[in-house]
Image (cartoon, rainbow, N blue to C red; front, side, top):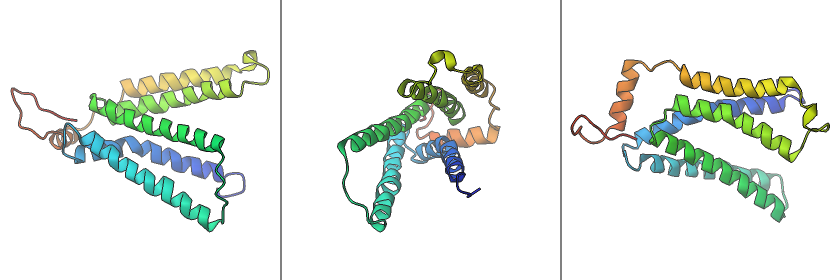
Amino acid sequence: MQQAGLAWLAYAMVTVFAFGTYGNLLHAGQLGMGDPVNGRYKAFLFVGVAYFLVAVLAPVVILIANGTTWDLPTKGVGWSLIAGTAGAVGAFAILLAFGAKGTPAVVMSIVFAGAPIVNAIVSMAVSPPAGGISSIRWQFVAGILLAAVGGYMVTLYKPPPTPHASAVQHNAATSAPSLGGHSKSN
């Protein structure tokens, strides 16, 4: 798999695994904070720390090791900051969705079914097909529709959690005694 030309696929699969586990790990971090009001923000703070370690320190070490010039064109810096902001806003919105009673299984299914659709539309807007919109093949349109239907079906028909898992999640998320049958949770 590490042949010339297929390294991109290996890196893409690393990303699939990282992003595929992200929602569950983030939700666990949120619950692990033990703070029903601010737990998600505390968890996001440590997401930021992790971004600093991985996205700031690692590239600096690699750039220094490669003897880079520190010429940073404004256009590249600007687009990179916008990209980072989009990623951070998306990550923060995932936490807000969890706080609004969304579960990792549902939220992440919607995110990962919807993101390829948005990517396809934005990519075509930035770099339109050579033959115009009429040159778009039906298989592409079918793929977009299948992504949407797939996200919907995964969300609608996800298996229910085991009673033990639900109790563990509830206990981890509850920090105050129940008042009138209601408890606060993230």
